Figure 1: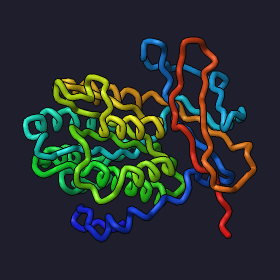
Figure 2: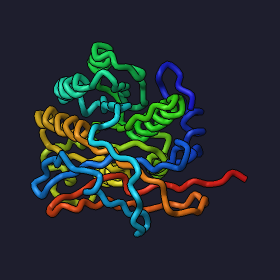
Figure 3: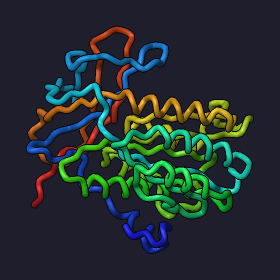
Figure 4: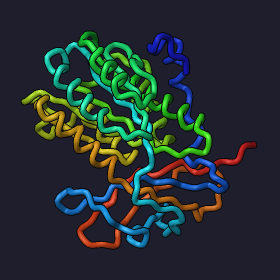
Length: 306
């Protein structure tokens, strides 16, 4: 995609709506499916110290053979998305502070970018490990305009795809942490475009929905923004959060940082020999009682070029 001064142009958005990422399985000698797995107990606490033998991976109901395993999380490439629409005016200072604290927790091997979105999506800082540069970019966000969440998510997914393509033998986890306080109103791409690209990526989406007290979404009623954030998180192995007080944001960002710091890397070579590009559903189970694993919901299998 083409980004001019960090902004999505109309022509670019029209073109990217028809573009689909190629495939989710990456080549490493063989077709290795790599999962970033979060494990929690019945109280929602992170479970550490598990071994490879504790993990069972099923693809379309067939038990797979785990060939790669690590308790130490791989380095991460992270997109931090901040809603700066007009409705965020009074909330933005606290949101900036929370996002800054999150960026400070990057390890020396991690990289992050900052994307600000209102009526347009703007890359304020390209991928870097420079925490000062990231903080300065976060603090440059200013409230104004409407909400182009889908454009921002599509931009982040496309940028992360480029990072993966440019990697020379180095494997990184990929994640998006997106904060928004309302429904998308001005994007030139659709939710279906974003969801398709997300499912074809290796990126976990952590979505933070900031709601006003009394908002229908907070009372359990159906809400489009609620549905969008939940669906993206579920399909990609991330997690949705919904809060009605901006003061809760630092704790939410801290939870996400803790999770990303305590994931397991699990890999296998699929027993499915077909190369038809079809969707394959994944379920990860843990052999210990009262423990739950969360990973991406599936992937598109390899497809032979003809």
